[in-house]
Image (cartoon, rainbow, N blue to C red; front, side, top):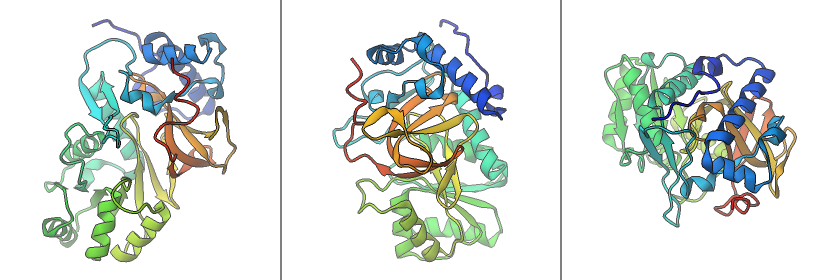
Length: 332
């Protein structure tokens, strides 16, 4: 294994408290990945962008997420410790995220969770994740399982359907006043809320997305309204993450996601991937995830969103087509 010096450490990422520090680390990550990531460097060269020409966040090229389906996006050399795969698309292609440092990922997901919800050891975790439970290569399953391992509570469960066993697990925790977090994929939570409108008071409910292809698409606001009404909850939380990223963002109010200090969202114009929108303007979501240093820190996603202030954003939907328009044509 060839040892490659990383441009920063996790403690540095976790202590970011200033935009200038974020910029400095982002430029360091860009230079590192331009030098040691074969796919990313080829993409930059295809755009005619040289390492010395990047001086601001807006100069950085963002790798189209579709390239994770066709290329091994890895920075540096080393033993692949873990592979995460996406659920795939109608063409059967899956994105693959190669982990060179599994412990780096564990620390990142735990730090991000703890900043929003506190110490995971205090919670019992219940997961309603059909379609994911059957996939050991799911990053979502890995994340929830790691949270379960950190818990001091003895009762944790994964469920593939919202049946009687699922309801009993929830009610048992409620009866024993156990602090509980329920992770649920959107379509299954909606099914549960419509068929079994029980009270989930005392439960923190985190929906993880996942409506596409399962039932008629509805907005997150519509979903949350139904869940609040049917399940007697005042607040619904959301998790935003994806196979190709290493970090997660969580929403705790009004559907707005807050990025951890090492993650930043830029909104690109839908028809010009190198131009960016102002606050409260809708466009394609580009994500800087500095924790993703072993893969690619700069991802152009297929999601539509808008920034509501420098550290918060909303996710509004997805592009109609699978490819990210304007970006997929730039790779040689």
